[in-house]
Image (cartoon, rainbow, N blue to C red; front, side, top):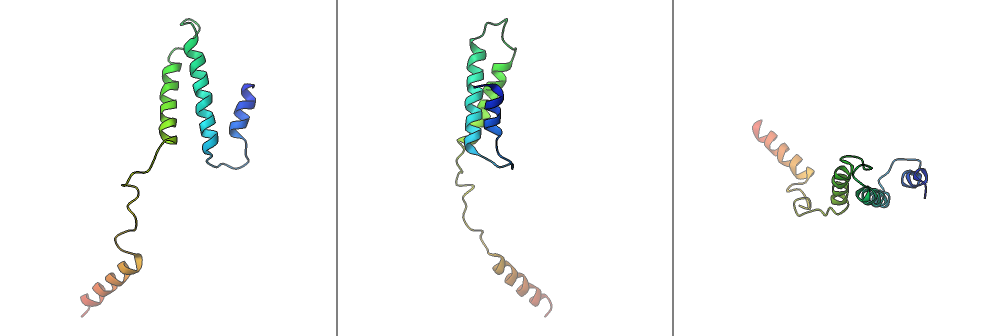
Length: 97
């Protein structure tokens, strides 16, 4: 598959939206590039490219594998908006007695 066709497959679509499949495909493409670069002779390789690709792949993989913890899933707020409003109104009424 040509480079332009691969990029076009990753970026197709008319409006910007998050697509986990495209992000996974991008990670796979970066893994393939990283593997190819790591097999090259030192004189033929791009200095620092494999280190940079390792870092980018780690960041993207961590994003794809992220699971919310209990800190993000706290449930309902301790007080609803209606309860906050009625408590504030009662406090207001008591201050004007």
